[in-house]
Image (spheres, rainbow, N blue to C red):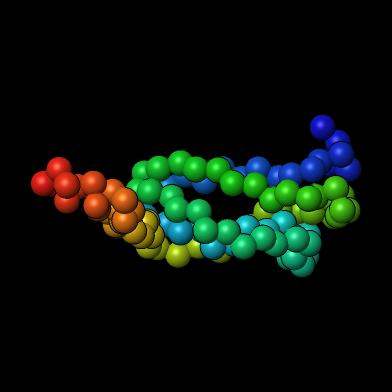
Amino acid sequence: MNKSEAKKAKMVFKNIGNKGIIITEINLKTKNKDIVVKEANKTYLQPYGKTETSIGGLNKYNLDVVGSGGYVCMFGSKPEEKIIPQLPEEKSGAQKWLDKIRGN
């Protein structure tokens, strides 16, 4: 595909170590290291794992000047997912009255 027709750039990351990595930003740079486009990212890469991410909307940029891609990362663990406990459903007044009649 011609660079001028590209809509996104896909980046594949492989972790060769035993620590988790969090990728916080991906970017495309010129040969002079000027940043053409950057995108915030929160991709977790598990130890010895592989993942991919992409930068979209590239049809607005002159990709002929792009020389390389880059990223910003740090060691870290996978963010904990917050678990919200489900509260039991509140019974309606009619249901409470019916339960009282039945002896429940």
